[in-house]
Image (tube, rainbow, N blue to C red):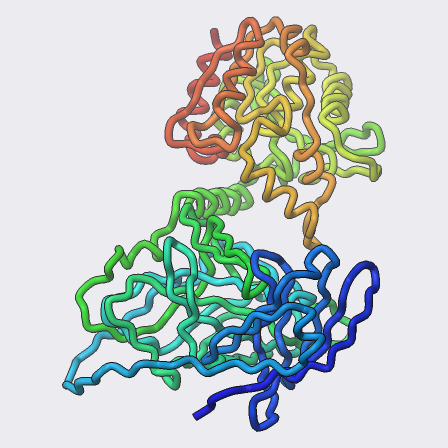
Length: 541
């Protein structure tokens, strides 16, 4: 039995940029390296983990110079030492945890198989990336288990866009208290290496995990080492999906504070159990939450829109304006009705509106500058003022005297600005999910946009992201200038705050308001019949 191990630390203290650097190694009483021992300062982001050879390096900021380092290894009692103590005595001994063995009664027991957690990867996911420079970061899920459970395997999904030759992960399992991981239940390390992406399977049977009358456990992972592909950036993340439940766990190091955020990792446990039901509803983790279902619905509509004739009609034309070519299509006859799509959208997004309104109006649908088939030769930031000016030139070149506007999202913002600037050209305007400024949308959306801006992928159009983060900036005075009838529309569950939508309506003298039940920001996709008929009624008044 292992009784002690020693931490033999060769300490090099250099004050560089107001930091103390400690280098050392962790060994047992037989002078053998102890890999993957956690080292950290409580309630901070400062931590380290020993490598495969038991070596570590940690830099202590000057403000934490009087703090204690805590050494924590699976199967041992943790030890706390001040930096000064470590400098004076480089050998640290950790005593093995004492384990009381309960009486075991062996009896025949038939257990059932079950998978707890996310069994499949949904079409729409996001990624929780690991920082190659911070191996102490832990991320994972809480799992609800049966009162009598054996763990067989842990499965999780690595994003396909990950790039590495090989990664080494440390798997941690914790008891749970008050919705967060508490103490570790491991007596030895679980280390997993892989050179593939997608689904991964870790065999847990050698560790003989069995839980009695336990409701929840937490399973987390750390990226403790990696090998890069030649001349490629390192990328590694675990697939996750949106969820209203705060099941995404995160902390910087073993002595840091846990954070729980909305979402769930694509991971599951294969178990054996002998009770009929979970202590908490086992189907919870398999439910497709509202947010996920809304996004799935959005992408399904986008696919249908792509299959329509709209946005790629052979009769489509281009207009040359201000270092751009604006693509447009026309349908029907009568009074002009112009459609303006949303951010990163195109003409095809109105595939359920165009055929309806073409029976009553001369429908003109545009691809906004730099989106759809429209081009943009500039590299300056996008603004709604610029989009409004593009619209003005389109109307001039098509020799239109007066038009009706329908704008969705960004298109609605442009419509409001254009309406205030050129009231003589407008008959009536309808907006769907428009805003006056970025504060009009949910904090979650702003957070997601900032994340995209900070870590853009190769497909991210930064100008469009920055547009939503910085604009519009429509004032109440500008709204007061609008004297023609305006129809302000939003979904009941829109990303645009309902109070903000009402504020727009209240500052336009002839504005009407419609909040469409059971709809999100994607009303034209989700409730086309209700939307189309309401707008037609408004236009025909």
